[in-house]
Image 1 (spheres, one colour):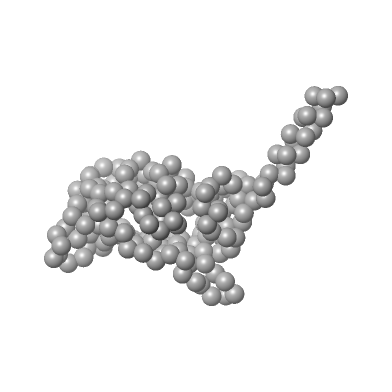
Image 2: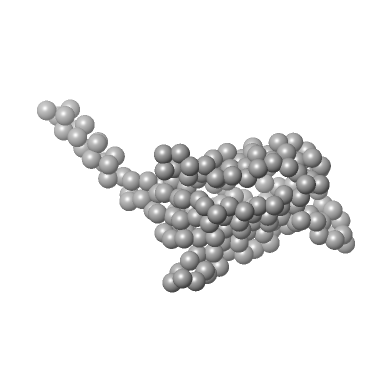
Length: 181
């Protein structure tokens, strides 16, 4: 009787503990063909959405690389910017950013990538493997339920006085539903 009750309690706890769901859609991207080629994509399997990339870097990129993440939240039919920052990944490790959202996104991203978030970026294959948000993600403490637009661009400055060279940019929409704990 005790084992059956324990098993029943475990089943009830598992059912009560639902997970957060993120649904990615409307992906658009551009890669600078002089520096890289590949794909950025959304996967959906059994209602679990993930975001990924498989990109081959063909040239070494060093000097200054400015990465600009922009995160907007839809509130009352209007997008409000939560994050819009320029990071020089050759000078500042995103994992050490003063901005808590940048720092948390960077930390979460390291679970899904096969490369350093800091430059230099050497030729080779760069992978983002099935990035998703689940109930264990620390981002859920910073980002409320709702619809979002995320944009990310990277611009290369080989020398301080050189003209900017766009490396890539992408935009993706997502909807987040927090699970119950």
